[in-house]
Structure formats: C-alpha cells, structure tokens
Image 1 (cartoon, rainbow, N blue to C red):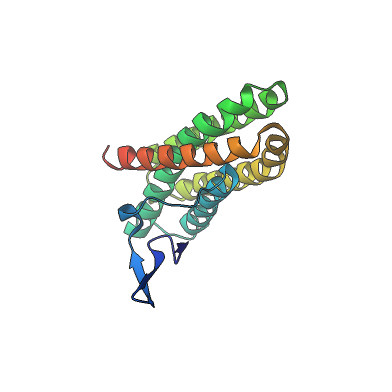
Image 2: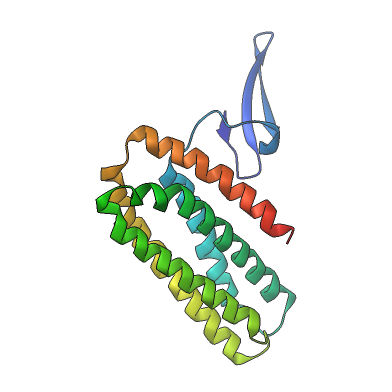
Length: 184
C-alpha cells in the first residue's frame, strides 16, 4: 500500500492472477507502514507554512481570510498539543533535551498569544495584517529552528523504535485534537 495523496491510499490486490488497483479513503484502512516522528511533524509544518503564507496574502474581512485563519489556528493548536505530548515531553526526560524543549514550549505560548491577538483584532483593520505577518514570521522561525536544532538533537537521544512509536502516537493525538477543536 502507498499514498496517492493525503486523501487516498492505493491498495494493490491480485484477483485471479490479475492485479487491481483500488483507491480507498484513509479512514477506512489502518495504515500499514509506520511513520517516524520527524515525518509526522514535517507534514504538519508544511501545512502551517502554507496556511501562514496564504493568510498574509488575503485582504480585508473576507471569507477567505477568515477560513485560512481558522484553518491555521486549528492546525497550530492540534499540532502544539500533540507535539508537546509526544515530542517535547519525551525529550525532557533527557538532560540534553530540557533547554531546547523549554524554549520550544515558550515559542508555542508566543504563537498562542499572537493567535489570541488576531482573534481580538478587527479583521478589516490594517493592524490585523500587521499581527498576521508577525504570526507568520514566528511560525516560520519556530519551524525552521525545530527542524534544524531539535531534530538534530533529538536524533541523538531517541532510538529508532522510539521515533517510530512517537510518530504513531503523535499522529493519533493530532487527529484527535483536530476533531475536538473543530467541534468547539
């Protein structure tokens, strides 16, 4: 089985000696291949970068601006909770991971405050875009730092088995958080 896209997996089955290709929504199949924590995090990071970049290209109190902001807010919140539980906390169990984990948690808090500021600011105001650009810059900064510093440091601390298990746990928590936050 392999991914066709985020929406569908391809499953190859042989019937009577003839192969058949099936596109199956991922919620109907439990993934066979495990993903490590870095691949799982990078997937969400890519989404965050795209949404942050799209958000600062919007204008006024448009439906597009609101929709992109809500998507980014959901992605950031679900990602932060899952990442804190299944990446930072395990790293904090090691002396080498404490300082970087604390720094990353502080940056998550800064992102939360910027999101809150955007929620309190009139979307049609030019000030909203100033805050949105600050949020986009901070998102890019945090993700770059995490992928370059954290991934390197944690790669020395975690075993391959831990990386795989944390990836699986992160993805499950991330999806649970997205579902929970979408209904609030």
